[in-house]
Amino acid sequence: MTALSRAAILPEPDLPDPAELIAEGRRLAQSVSVEPGPFLDTFGVESEHEFKQRRMADGGLMFHAQVGYRDPEKTRRAFGEIHQRVAVAGYAVDRYGICLDWSMGYPSDARRDMPKGTGLILDSPEAFTRLTRAAPVAPHFGDWVIGTPAAVENTSAALLAGSTSIGNLGQYFTFRLPRWDDDVGTTAETVKAIALCAAQPVEVLIHSNLDDGFAAMFTDLACGIGAVLIEQVIVDELLGGRVSHCYGHVFSDPLTRLGFQRALAKVSDSPGTMVYGNTTIYGTGEVENYANLSSYLLVDLVGQRTMATGHALNPVPVSEALRIPEIHEIVDAHLFANRLAERTDGFERLFDFEAVNAVADRLVEGGRRFKARVFEGLTEAGIEVSDPFELLLAIRRIGPRRMEELWGPGYPDEEALRGRVPLVAATTVAAVEAQSGGVVAALDPSDRDLLRQAGLSACVASTDVHEYGKLLVVGVLDHLGVRIVDTGVSSDPEEVAATAADHAVDFIALSTYSGIALSFVEALAREMAAKGVTVPVFVGGKLNQIPEDTDSSMPVDVTDDLGRLGVMGCQSVEDMLGELVRMVSEDHQG
Image (cartoon, rainbow, N blue to C red; front, side, top):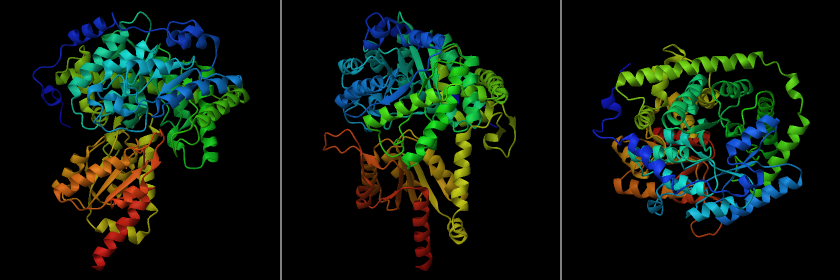
């Protein structure tokens, strides 16, 4: 395996001075500080960190809701209505995760002409404050703030709006905004934003969703705990802040879900932000999704009752897989979760925690080993690991796959994915592998042989930062012997068209999620026409978008619009395979 070198990772002759970046963030704190708001005033606390510590000491549960419609006024109304309706039932929503649109990650002066998703767009610092004043609930700006090109301006607005939980550091490592390649500038803004938070007179949690970062791409969950330890060095030790972690989207196995929560308790003295709902198990049946909702909530309830970590529980509405949930659906999920908490009080006495604790211990031991190996390897490569800027940028550029191959704690095995047998297997990557194999196995044998013998090639891309759909497509096509040219995540239409032309592929397969399916395909069609590329295009995932000529904040299905552009919208990867079989059959007959 080729050793890493500084010249390959950080080839720039001059990089920003971290001391100057930190000083700039601290200077800004003289004019930008946390302003009191309804949440802080109502509960008589200086920060959410203090609130969480109180609740943990009292043994109380906390609940988290994700809210963020495109329309700011609808979002404000949702803040007030959800709080009020849940309170009338005798319960509480403790914190709101504010779903900013990904376009908020661009600097405000560049935002107008950049792609937009389906989330909330706040056009001024005052808009941040108007929102957080709508209810006495802790405002959590979890996405598209820290870790983006707009990190400093968005962090400043969040602090002035009374937020003391700001993220998402996990996104810095894995998310690329379309049409934005300045990772040096993004890193500088991230360092300054964290320094700004660290210089506040109250505790500000630097939120990191591990499922948005490298942890979700590791095959070994122990590397996820290692990521926690590495982020603690960067944020807590080198920048003087306090990192707080979230997990849960991709933890479907109850044993490892609970074991990971206990491992976090062993390595962190900061309260967690929230434990997110396991959205990967949600299907299209809303009734069936109540079983999915209760299955992960029960694990999280038991976890907080037996080893409180300060994570608020997130009951994801059962409609999540179909559309952006409406206000009443969020309320329903919280009423369900609180009633479930009441009905399952005492269930923890039915659990034998020996197996859970064994998993937690393996995760902690492996995570510590992974962290040590990462720092040793970076040092050998010439990276200054006491420099938070270099450390952040080097890790981002190396990526999770290479890091796990080089430094993972599992023992080497050439036959294993990433060349190592995991200490504790991550369920997500393994599930995608199993699902892709199952899709191919379910094909008619003659169709499977037909595709394998066709010698096809494909350009595969994701239109946004979400990668699991693309991973499934890549896995299926790989099993069928299709030559794959992968342009990665957050690919630009120009890049996809150019790649398809340069490699003379037979078709393009796109995965999309963040509500830009139609605008991306329209731009891709123009680029393909300009380059003379006429291959079929398949698009799967969330085939929706908010129409430009409407005041609605809800996306609409654009499958028919894609069809009019000559693109096949796929509800499943099987739809694409069926069309490929038809195409190859016609070619053979021709």
